[in-house]
Image (cartoon, rainbow over all chains, first blue to last red; front, top):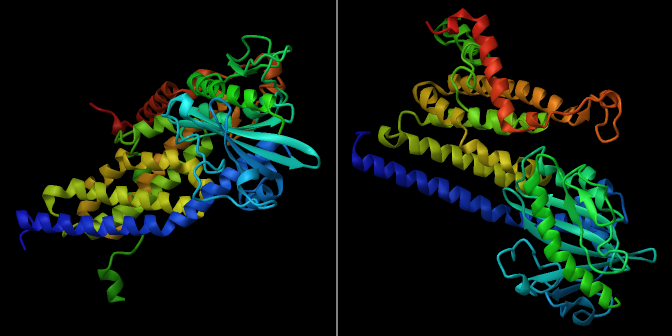
Length: 254
Length: 221
């Protein structure tokens, strides 16, 4: 057959597209369950890492589902004004910690990354109540935009609703070696012991400042040189989310 | 014995040249000027550069072999599209499999994997070599060019990470900058410019300079 002919070209292209498209579609469907399980376990891993109960490096992804079951005692979802829209305590039978797959308001199913576009007032704010050896930590989730793509984080807030116990940040595509440092200990550990409010109990949030530019206090942490926009993204994300959590946690006794 | 004479040995002098040439006289980055973009962007850390090199080598070899196998049936008028489809499909398959079975690796790789599709070395070698050569020669050409690319990434990231962050493969070599130990105690500072893409341009240019100065064959009249 003449390789230059239109017919040959069209037949070749059609067969190629069918083979490649079919292979990719099959692969995507076949691998989806395994990929989803990885993503869910990672979420649990991040939540446990933000509790400060365990050394961050010791929380292995494959064991996180077990830890999640042991530590997370209650899941609450609130809206922008602090009204409870989901509470696992009311929805679930006593002692059951099952995640409601179909309930999109279940705190575990709320994905702050997915609601980036919605107005702040329409966002949902998930809270995970974690308990271990009499210590209570509220792990809250937040998300924003870095320089290239999404950044997100899980913050562990102490029982007073004010002090930060631990923080875990991650990103989708920040520059390796610059913005990507937000998921490393040297950035994350700065948050431990910081406060959401000033000495008078008025909400201040946590500011990320130019590194070395000023004396750090309870409400500030050092940013990253060479990654100004990533740090700014993390700062904006914290300012949107933390105030809602602070107001809810300090006003309600959980 | 007669068979051996007819068939070219697997590592004949010609085939060895396919691997060794791209490492020196015909380096894809410094001489062919292909794949410069990723040599500038993913060389901040040696670890990332290594991972990127390995991924490019794999895609380049497999892509070269596949295109070489199909070289007699590909319609000439849509050959670029066919090459693109082969590369893109390979990269997506690699990415999906990593996400399902080696999730941690996929997270570090996700940024780089996408970049492979646009790496000009791959399209360049498919078009320039695999379309006109047998699969084995194409595989060697892929390996050679991948290694030549990796070599440059290695050198560039070595200097960038060393002077930009004071580390090599994440291990501190000049002491702890935050604590001010080692060299930092004497007032040494990391150079932030080294972490940014422009410094790679300078390093790649110096490599080209050194290479051309030492090899008169490469100098333009």
